[in-house]
Length: 66
Image (spheres, rainbow, N blue to C red):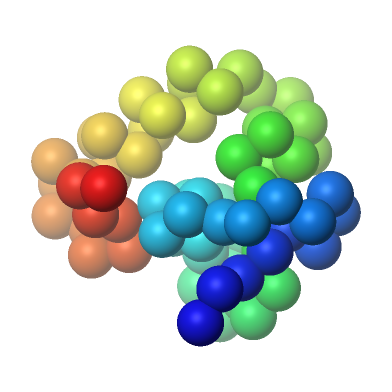
């Protein structure tokens, strides 16, 4: 099932959904894309991707190697 950003309508990736769950609420059913999530938390996309890699290295199952 495709999911879309609730702010801009962009189709979401598995990792964007995972990052939203990790940073906002694991039980979320509506999500923000990478750009909108970064804007909300005032971080760069580079920082967000680094966070995803760190979470994956630590074994977090919310992320995948797309």
